[in-house]
Image (cartoon, rainbow, N blue to C red; front, top):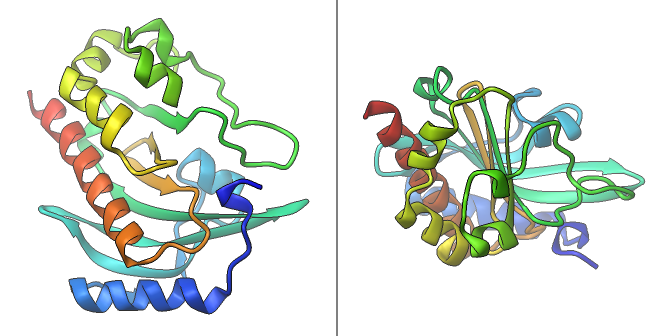
Length: 206
């Protein structure tokens, strides 16, 4: 059974998020209606992050952190963090970096209409861990610069287990397949989201 399909006590996840929010100055939000901003939010239907907390995810990065749950034959649960990188849209309208083999339905793998990372990265470790897809006709030279050696090494070796991110028209959703994240896991997801956000911002500014 995958991490995403474990069914924990709902109160455990809510308690961990509440404690994390209190410790880090985030504001609890019972339900955040994010809407269909990225593929995972589209797949979930309503795009409801519940429970959630809003505030600073990391240095200079604000957003929301919480749990995304939906059911399609069986229940899928993810810890998610949502933020915005509006400056990215002219450079990379859509960029999906998703754990290889991730399921978002009972009968199929996560699907893409775009190209895979192995067409434009030589990192075996990155290709083994992720499937990276972009919209057709995006600037692959810019993307090569975004995926600097340091960023590739961090994604391949240091990002949280089961970490993925989706960037779609400025909306950045980062997630882990953790049905019942404790405070340490939430802190790791928040830090990873901030790191990805800063990396994308930096490349947009150059």
